[in-house]
Amino acid sequence: MLVTISSQPPRPKWLRAPAPVGGNYRELKELVTRLGLHTVCESAACPNVGECWNRRTATFMILGNVCTRRCGFCAVQKGAPLAVDYDEPRRVAEACAALGLRYAVITSVNRDDRKDGGAELFALTIQAIRERIPGCKVEVLVPDFQGSHAAMDIVMRAAPDVLNHNTETVPRLYRQVRLGARYERSLDMLRYAKKTSPQTPAKSGLMLGLGETEEEVIQVIRDLRDHDVDILTLGQYLRPSPKHLPIYRYVPQEEFDEYKRFAMELGYGHVEAGPLVRSSYHADASLHGQHEHGFTAGAVRSIA
Image (cartoon, rainbow, N blue to C red; front, side, top):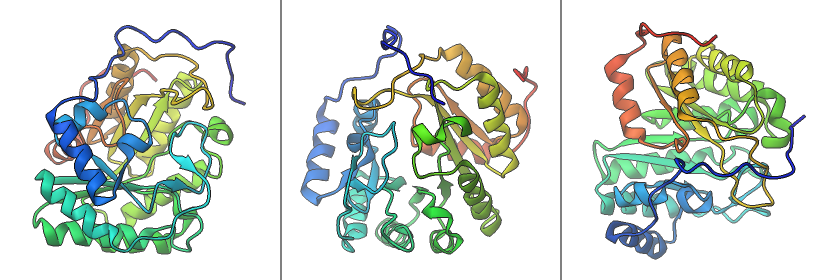
């Protein structure tokens, strides 16, 4: 059971993100509004929106702005889903072209109302971006599709450059953090994607600071690697509002560094670990690191 605390720990002075201001930020904001698109950067209240938008990068969120699940950590609006907009892939591709992207990241809300969980729109978006920007790489951050291998097949046939699905937290905390999800299901979907397309890097990530133990984090890192995950992200959970799950603790950078060393020793191709790391943070660099370093284990100290 999730341990709660009566008051939130004070936010450390070292945990600061650039403010969402600047010319590029305003331009991207206007572009997204004009094209009627959503980004996880805004909808999920990502702390890196200022940095990323000023670098002219964003993670586009397809299939509307309303999620069919009620995860305790997520700021995305919950409720009855919107109608599927089949023009959305074209507009996402237009936005990517306007930004001059060579690496696009696409995610979505959960669409448990649909048999394929929205997999068709992922495939159409990948296709639209490739047609509009030849050579542009596409990473997709997909939901679990309620465990449907057929839905994952639809996505993998579109040949994303990276297949990302987050486990988010440790198994013990799933009922509080990821209501409607199952840890074993997420692991199965990651392994199935990798089995379907062995050459496509599989990626997953965790939030820390929700009450997990070091031993639990280590076990999830092991489990993900055992299920053929190549790229790992580890970040600090930040409470979007008082209605969301409380922060149990702020994890210092030194602990993130230790987890990264351990993961690299297990053979991950690339690891991003730090308080402000999110699933798509420096995503293009993670793919470069994956190709550059492969699965060679470094001579590092394990924390296990």
